[in-house]
Picture 1 (spheres, rainbow, N blue to C red):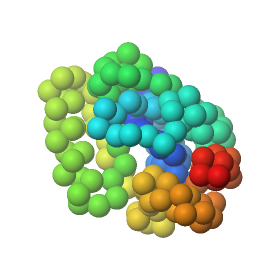
Picture 2 (picture 1 turned 45 degrees about the vertical axis):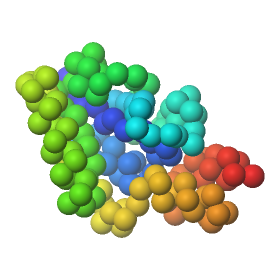
Picture 3 (picture 1 turned 90 degrees about the horizontal axis):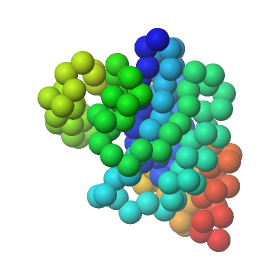
Picture 4 (picture 1 turned 30 degrees about the vertical axis):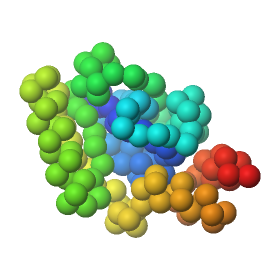
Length: 158
């Protein structure tokens, strides 16, 4: 069985993230979405809320599941017996960052491959920070996240 992990903060998970998961699920037998703790980020949602939103967003993908993980991504990949780490890239700036991380992960675990996937072009401008900012100002986010996540965002700022 070929397993890949898709790590991220997912604060919140967007339709761009879901697009990458859907496409990766056609390549791998199992996709494990890893809700990671990032010490450089202050999140709007706590880990359990982010896990809940991810689970709701991927429920239609039969070979996808989600877990929480507090340590290095490569450690999560090893624990899950994954052969690959999926990373989404939207722009050159994403690539430069992901390239550095991929090289470090290869140094730590040479048998785990990093796969960079671009989201559908309709999501290339989309990221969680933009969605949070829209929600903060009362804008409708349902074009960017599923209905459940849109409601969670709305309730955060009421």
